[in-house]
Amino acid sequence: MTDKTQIQGEGNYDAARKFDEEERKFVKSGQVEQKAKEAEEALDGPEGEELERARKETGERGATPER
Image (cartoon, rainbow, N blue to C red):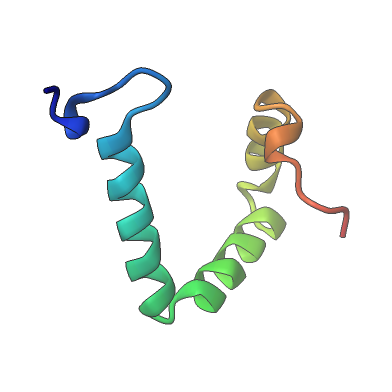
């Protein structure tokens, strides 16, 4: 029988599991609000134009609500 951790058909299960684990750690760390504030400041700062250009290049999946 095939080890399920080796199945990579519809997606990379190992990478998805690791991403989920790291995301949970980040949320529990209490840094979400601080990082959101840093991102907002970056958008309003000198790199904002470049960040907006990158967001547009990724299409709607990277869209943020209008401020």
